[in-house]
Image (cartoon, rainbow, N blue to C red; front, side):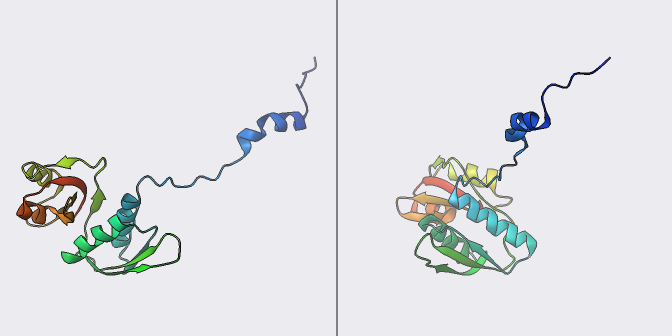
Length: 156
């Protein structure tokens, strides 16, 4: 009784080699704003004093200005490296959570309150950020100006 081996070792490696190779996986960048806000939230959880965001965009800068206006982050600096800019954000430990809303829902002035109730933990603190025809602003400013827009994200 003799067992027959099908093929040599080199023939087996030739057949299974594509399965044995480990491919290096990289993170897919779905939304630049979502990645930036996630980096800020993670750095805040780790207790970091500052965080580097890249790439930078106008939307990220305006979103950060709204956060800065309400005291949730400190100063931030845009660094020009002749490609996609970088932003260094000073953290102050006040931010609990931040996130992006995707897809960017249309929100009228009357529907603003429903989104505030759904997304924010309390009426006393936290903000929704909208992009409107008058620029990027928080939900309270949009309510004062009586304009709706598209919902970008939130922070509290």
